[in-house]
Picture 1 (cartoon, rainbow, N blue to C red):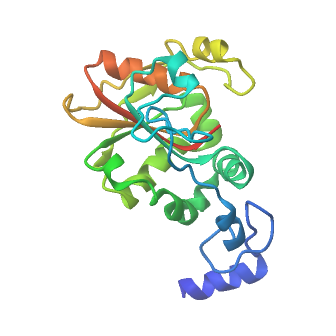
Picture 2 (cartoon, one colour; picture 1 turned 90 degrees about the vertical axis):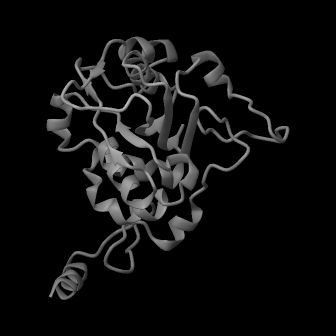
Length: 238
């Protein structure tokens, strides 16, 4: 009955691709096969700290950091980002973030499962939190949603909401690097209602890595709490 109902709904209200707007085949996806093939995944060589793919040749075995990480001096030691924040990848993120894109779960499962197994194996995922007012307005936290899908598709251990947002901040969009850092200063705190293993490996999860200011602010709080094994994972890097 469920399959029949889905078929009838797709007939009356056909699914349209979030990438190109064309009708999607099947009953589960909102990213058509053509747009999925156009996605450009981050590949080696890349910055080990944030996951940004380098342009041009890089010496084999190099631990080189990108200029952004050199300036940031991040407290996390390993980062992975799946997609460049451009074209279909950017539209996918915007749909998830601003259009209550929980319906993208099956498309995200196809994407997130391509995260290297060793990166998330036996780790705890810490979503970057939204302030309660923004989360109420949006209806969900996209970073927490991504973390939940990652747990299902990888060998991560669990989603652990170790952080809370204690200060409402303006959107980071359009701000300079220094303004971004100032905007999120003292915006996060440890969630005292959650227990954690200080010796475990933790991965901060967010939708987009831009300058790293938000992730660095989160990392500072976790570092002060005694966590030393810290990584970051983002869906896109822009």
